[in-house]
Length: 300
Image (cartoon, rainbow, N blue to C red):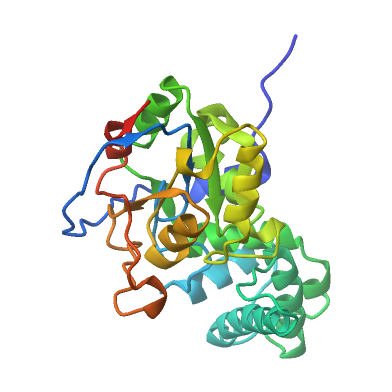
């Protein structure tokens, strides 16, 4: 007799803390037009497919101190000092790692959050905020998930399942490209009861920034996607990238020749970047206020 695979502990942690999160209207007017000849659709994740309580993964949330305290206690670590310092230590660690990478020539670096927690907990121990011995033997991956589940609540955007099903029905290649960490596929599974692959996302077209050390708005991930699609005879003009940020999503997508759809469905995550010279003169092909509108635009 065979049994279905049990969800990973990380999936269960996200599932336990998940709560419905409604998008906040942006007041934007959708701009829809036909997109002909599309063969592949790539999506940003946080703020586009998933409503994100803090806007995007890794963003500092208002409840960060509480999230840190609860995450530590979930692993049996009792805080020994004020955790405003603990949160500052975490973000200082990320910034220090970013600075090192920029000094080495990486313009938009991405960290591996497990390494961040290794360094941050060691520093918490040195500052006397936690037991330094426990800070060295903790399960850093689980600590990262326990914190993320609390600090950055996420929930599927309205119409997500129907949108993906309709795109699959058109025979399109689907991919993901996100400033994301190792736990992002587990979060997806926790919220949608299925892996990204189960919803049609090609495993070879999933790009999570921590894997490469580069984050958006670097064009690096977009270039990798363009190369992978070219191997399937898909040219850039046959690709649409859907994201919520003019700088991180629309700009690099247009630079590699993709068409771009700006998702303007949630005020928490919409980033128009008005006044930013980097996006001056840059425009999305379409503006969506609901995910399903991309299906209406694509004419195969």
